[in-house]
Image 1 (cartoon, helix red, strand yellow):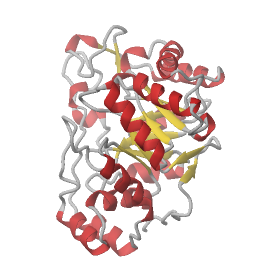
Image 2: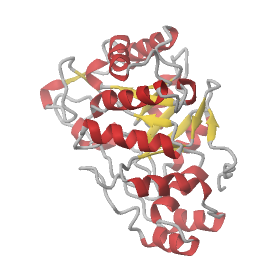
Image 3: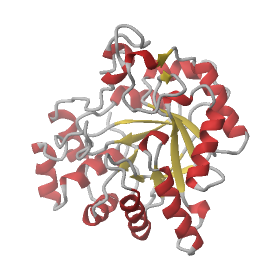
Image 4: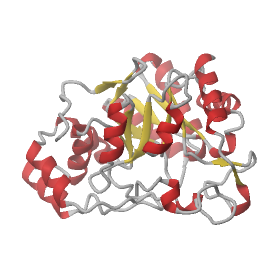
Length: 323
């Protein structure tokens, strides 16, 4: 059965902890990670109405994001309580999420983040700072201990909500079996070419929100692809609706009940992405995408798989055959 579309009258979704998450999020990862470029993009985003900002320790963008948001708050452009800021626990910080989040808050210049996520179900040795770990840098994940640290962050008021990223149904179930506080959301790759139906159904049944990263397939990233925005089905629908392919892909994600974290520092594309909320996409278009586009995952996480030191010996093991 097709999921019921969320009304465009509402640009927020209510989470299981009572928080409201804006449907369109602004991603701050960029390979170049140029501080002034990121700050300028965030300032432009605020003027266009973006209020949901996504960062992570490993992105290196926390300082630039915090600086731009801090200036906007000081200048009276926006109030802190009207922002939704997400950051993420990197694999080398699983031994002490509280200290990791305190470091993040210092970089952001904030007293709290709205959402703190376990970035990957992967634990690395404490000194690892590279996003592509070497074979000798893995440790065995103790999810119970990691989540206890995440719950401590919440208890201390360092964040308003906690969640996960890149978790399969099986890993979510393992977490739910012992968690005192269930994850509010699971941020995963999701777009018209990787639709995540099984995971979305599971999360819906357990009241966990799905937030989509790379909702356009990550064009411009080292690992990303233009396959989503260049897909003939998506382009055909865009032509009919007098929209861009990116707007169609984002609107598809919102229809499915997800929030979408989209990254572009280009002013025109930033405006177009925000305008996706107003696109009059119809059920027939959703069905066209769901039935005519072959699925293929783009961010596979192969760097976390090896036969020796990683807990995940195969790509199927990392994703629990959900790939």
